[in-house]
Structures are given as structure tokens and as C-alpha cells.
Image 1 (cartoon, rainbow, N blue to C red):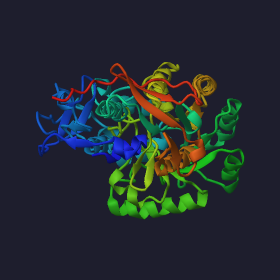
Image 2 (image 1 turned 60 degrees about the vertical axis):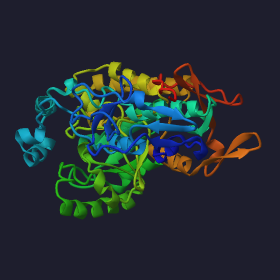
Image 3 (image 1 turned 45 degrees about the horizontal axis):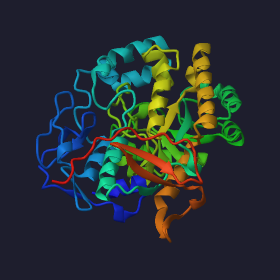
Length: 466
């Protein structure tokens, strides 16, 4: 019950003692922790529900502090992994048709490269009708996992008589949050626009990763890859041929994944992203990549619904998952019909409040239109401003992967009356402290490091010991 909490915060293990209140009931389902956290799993008392749309039992009154332990009516590890791995049902309780049901998966993806965007977006809007009535995961950003950890941290602090809890800060060098930019190259036209897009990124000092489709869609020349690499951008593998069938049949998947892994070695890619964000996390063991970027934070507007409900990276076995947090450019412009920064600004602000990661997918294919390009330029300017004013770390996915893996190997050890960090990249790491301000969990550094740290959102107060 302590494992995921300790991996998330990297705090000393002696501070953390989560225990079950009683034996868990066998049926998994949705329940609440406080007024606004929808969780999925088993509980020791009360009732869970099969979908998230109706009233849910709130179990927060059963969270108690007994001596130095936090007694819970659910298994924290189980609930967190259920959300991260999308092991829940009823995420979209309203009626919903998919593009693949409307016109047939194979037919649609065979025709997709030749369909004009107005036709595609019409079909997709039909398929996505009712998305805005879905209550879970929460739109436009779901941070259930992160907020649940904050509420559990409040319990840990109370279990230690209000003493602040040291932990290894999420980001290197005292950065308050993180952003990463990625470009999925879908067509030859998009590939040919990449030089212009790199110029635009460079104008704002933002480096990005380019996800390249290795077969069928367009030629991937050595010169193209060399240009990306020499200009300081990253190259990752994007699916196999982007036909939507990668996860449809296990035998076919195994045949394709061997080729996908070969392309990773050929392109010197550390990361991977599936086409259209299709995914089967139970098959990820066959990918020979260090990290993946295929799981949305909230997937209401994607062909495969779901969402991992977190804005922090997490491990799927040996692979680090860097979730897709921001709404994709194609969705923003063509499904929602918005050529403005309003939604992206809203998502950025929510991420800043939780000191999280905001990751973007912006396609060169959809920036040919000046309106779209102007919005993207505004986004780059906003990120550059946050880098200087709010100490946001703008990293390549590879850099983020390297950091998160190093942090996962670090530990806090006592040094006299204080603490010190041991492990790889320890010089870039910072010791942070979680403390309570009323019912609110706040993060802070010691006096020698004073970046702008935004407090975590208010936590529901666990019940005192009986």
C-alpha cells in the first residue's frame, strides 16, 4: 500500500505507514474520496458503482490517523494503478459511436490519408457526440492521482503530529513545473514543413521531439533525420504505418512490434508513440523503448476513450509513460473549432497549480494554415514566458525520461539534523517539504532555494483518530 506513494514523493519510508481499515470487499467500482475525487477500486465498507455518472459513496470519513499510521478503507496502490493503467469501466456512460463503428475500422484508416480534413472532422464529430457529458475522467485536465497523493500526504503529516515531510522535488534544479513539446509527422506534406516548424520553435528557444512514421506514409531519408538531429531536436518512432490496426490482433502486433523496435534502433530513438493514441498497456512489455507517450490524461476526444488521470510520469513495467496532457492541435482546431489559446491556457493554469507536466502534440501537418500557426506561436511565447517568470522546465522528452529515471533511484538519507539526497543526478535534485497550512498541503524548499512554488490544491481533511 505504500509503494506508489513512496515512488511518487521519494520521501523516507519511515514516514509512511498506510494500513487497511478492514478486508476489502470483492467488487471493484467507482467511489469518491472527498467531494471531487472519483476513484476506482475495492473498498472495505460501503458500496461502489459500475459507472461514474451517478451518485457515489464518499469514503473520506473512514480515513483515520491511528498512532503513526494512516488507516484507509481502500488500497492506495490498487486505486492509483487502476487509474494510471485505465483499469476502470464506465468512463463514458453516455451513448457514443466510434469512427470505426460508423464506417468500419479498416475502411476508415485505408481512406484516411485521402480524406480532406472537412470530411474527417465531420465523421469524427459524429463519433464524439456526447463527450462533454462524460464526468470521468475530469475535463479539461484530470489530476485525480496527484490530488489523491496530496490528500494522503495530509494524512501522513497528521500522523506525525503536523511535522513537515521531506521529499525529493519532482523536477530538477528547483523548477516548479515541466512542459514538453512533441510533433507527430503524419504526411509527406507535414514532413516537408518540419524545417519551417523547427525555425518557429527555435525562435522561442523551444526544442521538440518529432515522431516519425517509419513505413508507408512517406519516405524517411537519412538526410531528413540528420537535419532534425543536428538542429538539436529529438526523433522518436510513431507507430508502424499509422493504419489503426497495431493492437487489433496479438500475432500481428508481435510481428509489427519487432519491426517497430528495429526502427527505434535505426533512428536512435529512446521514445515511442502509437498512432491515434491507440494502446494496450498489457502488451507494452514487448516494446524495446525507454519511454512511451501514448496515454492521454483524459481521452474524451480520442478514438480510444479513457485517461490516466495524472500529470506526472509513471512506470509501465520498464517503460516510463509520459502522458499526453494538453488537447491536441487537430482536436482544438478541427473538432472543437477553436483557434485561440483559451483551452490551452486553462490547462496550463491547472497544471501550474499542481506543479505538474503539460505535454503537447502539435502536428506540422495542421500548421500550414496561418490561423493555426498564429495560435501555435502564441503558445510558444506563453511557454517561453513561463520559463522565465514561473521557472517552468521546458525539456525534450528524452531529458524528462532521463531525469525521472534518475529521480526514481535517489533516496533521502539523514545527515546530522538534516537530510541529503543520494543517487544519480543528485546535484540537480532539491529537497522539498510538504506541510499543512490549515487543511491545505503546501510545498516549500529550505531557504537557500527560493523558486516560485505554487501550493498544491486544498486537501480534504482526514478524520481524526477516534
